[in-house]
Structures are given as structure tokens and as C-alpha cells.
Length: 331
Image (cartoon, rainbow, N blue to C red; front, side):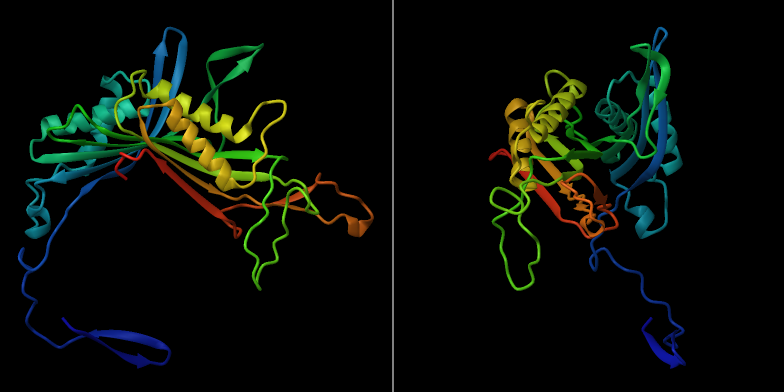
């Protein structure tokens, strides 16, 4: 029905048009539908046991399904719908029944299981976020069953799409998020555009400040063009080590960063060089600013020692996104 408004004081009250006839049902010719449904925020926690040594896999799972499911939207008939509670239960059953060493293999197994048992489903997309737990070290030795994790830990991620007819060639994107990286020196930013609204001071050779803190809360994802020969767990470790190595430089001397952009590009390209199975690497690197605190007002010289930190989620900050891919790759 057509809606109109009338004012009462400062409040707008919406009133329906006075019609006694319900609207005609929509037709398939009138509109197009692309339905998807699934289950989100499923917490799955598994302990992998090898004798007395334990390992934690702490996951948050999301499933989205596509296929011949339109009747529930068109008519309210649900005979094509796999209940989302059933999907949740499947997450736990596969976690118990399947042997896996990484979230990618879990997601692939989960998607394949749903497709194998429900022929009208043509595509299953599984997103998994894994909170990282590390064994504590006691007397220089890793504990067998005691772990530690931060309140907001670094998380591994994966996005897996398995389609009917291509069950053996899943589309896999792996990643890492909420990892803080910081250089306390050997970073600058100069030579940028200066217009009538610019008050940023340059940092680098010939500037008042020769160096700055460069800090980010990085989110990294990398898309595979084929299954890696060494497996997802080992290959992901290589990608992560490469990204951190290129951000940092040699342990004793580091490497100078002229900008976050320059460093991010080097990180992405080196990961692609070292891992042929990758099609692309995408980095999101928001600035976490650290402002030199003015202690000179109290007669205390402050030579880049004490700063006021910020939070990139609550403070205006730069956001740099870098997407590097092989020429033949499809984005």
C-alpha cells in the first residue's frame, strides 16, 4: 500500500493508505531472486590429541548455501530448506569425524559433506575464523596441555567455496587478521601533496624529524589458484613469515620504510614470488598513530621516547589497501 505522512508536533506518524485490497503477490517475471541462507557465529572448539600432547583449534564458523531453494521465498513452503540448526549441528559432527590440521581443510570437508547429502544444493560457502592459542612455556619447554591466548587474539581466517561438479577444486582464500605490527624507527613519510588544508609535517631525511613510529593493525588475505603441494597449514605459515619478514627487514638493522604503501607492496610481491600457488595477496593496513608528547612544556626534552598512542577504530586514521595479483588471475 501507498504510505503517506502527517505531522504531530515534532514526530512523523506513518499511516497506510486506506485500501481494503491486499497487494497482488509478486511474480517471477516481475522480479528476480537470488536466494542464499545459512548459519553464522557457530563456535566450534576442538582439542587435537596426540598422546599426551594437545593442540587447540578454536573456530567461529559461518555457512551459506545456494541452490534450488526458492520456494521458501516464493510460497513459504520449506521442503527445500536444510534447517540452519541442522547446519550448526553438522559443524560439530564434522569437527569430530574429520581429521584436519587447519581451518581450510575443515571448511572444505564441511562444504563437501553438505553437498554430498543434499543434491539440490549447488554451492556451499564456509567462512572460518580461528582464534590462536599458544602453549605456555615452563622451564624452557612447551607445556603439553596448558595454553594462553589474549582477550583479542590474532585470528587466522579462511573463505572456502565448494560448488557441485567441482568438489575437488574448491576456491580457497586464507588470511590473518588483528595482528599488530610496529616499527619504532626506520620509517618516514615525505614528498606528499601539500595544499591549503595540509598541516602534516614531513618525516625523513632533511626534515625536522628523521624517523617515526609505523604501526598498523593488519588484515591479510591471500587467494590460492591451486591447492598448495605442501598443504594449506605449511603454506600459510610461509606466507605469514614472508609478510612479517618484509615488513621488518634484517633483525639487527631493519629496513627503512618510505611509506606504508611501499612496504605493503613489497610484502605482497615477495609472498607471490615465494608461493607459486597464490593468485593474489590483499593487505589492509590502517595507521595506528603515535604522537610525540610535548614534554618540552615542562622543561623535559623528549627525543622520540614518550608518545600518546591511538586506536585506529576510534581515532581518525589513514587506511591503506594493497591488492597485488598475477596478470592471469581473476579478481
